[in-house]
Length: 203
Ligand SMILES: CC(C)(COP(=O)(O)OP(=O)(O)OC[C@H]1O[C@@H](n2cnc3c(N)ncnc32)[C@H](O)[C@@H]1OP(=O)(O)O)[C@@H](O)C(=O)NCCC(=O)NCCS
Image (cartoon, rainbow, N blue to C red; front, top):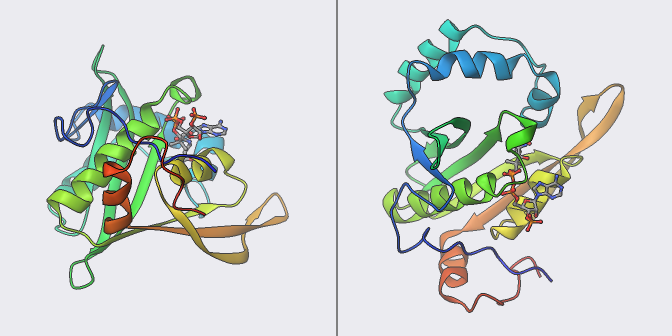
């Protein structure tokens, strides 16, 4: 049984800053990087279920302007602390305030930036923001069943598998399930106060 990841400095420390990365606002120059990532078919296929589509920098600039004024979406860019480099994004979106519920998304654009702890730290910061700043009660996400890296990350952070849409996604003629995962604020809070070796909520 895996322990839920509880990162030093993410719960009692700076709201937007971990040990490796920080969460910040989109910058105009990010759009060029996002356009480059949109041309990476493998990345887009992991991050989304719809058909990947290369986009221009202008597309991302316009999207950033719109999402910046959308009260139901909070998107952050992930930047490294050591050299302020853009490595990804993390977001809670489509918030239903009446239900205090939102959807989580994360992506690191470059393979070289993965498996270095950036994703876990950025999502940990986002969870604290979503539960303690936005006051959300529950977070949900969906993930393609073949995306073992993402499923493992989400489990470590306390998300439980709650459902499965069979053969929801087609990849090169193969039908793959879509997994639904969820995390309740109270479960996340107990994991934060439990000893580091506490058992996973995923029982
Ligand atoms: C999923 C993603 C965000 C993970 O971020 P990351 O920075 O690479 O992950 P971390 O280095 O923080 O690793 C945290 C945990 O995630 C899991 N993990 C990450 N990469 C993994 C891999 N390649 N294989 C198996 N588990 C992996 C592990 O449990 C890891 O903990 P460990 O290092 O103690 O084993 C990143 O791989 C990514 O952006 N992928 C492409 C886009 C995507 O799939 N987005 C999610 C869509 S639902």
